[in-house]
Image (cartoon, rainbow, N blue to C red; front, side):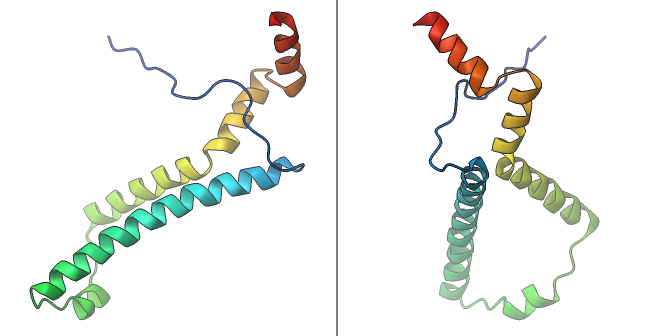
Amino acid sequence: MVKSVKRTVKGRRPKFNTDPAIDNVHAMMMALTAEVTVLHDRLDTVERICEAKDIMLTEEIENFVPDKQTLIAREQWRQQLLKRMFYLLREQANDEAEGHTDVSYNAFLDEIA
């Protein structure tokens, strides 16, 4: 039996702003920017390869109608992206649900110091 391991960082996350919502939005924007950058690079590669082979895809792309499997795969990818974008908010909610607050974290630090 394979046991799943929770892959999250423990401890407090760095705070850069007085309003934690700004840090959350920043983390979400960074995750989205990373995804967009990778997608841009891949699309640019495909376009350059096609152009080098005299393949013009613009009209085909505009007229493409995805089948059911493609739609399912795209939705799965979209859900994974949303999981990455909202990771920090989920972790904060989990910390709060488990009673991990700034007060309990500082008390723990005082205890081990």
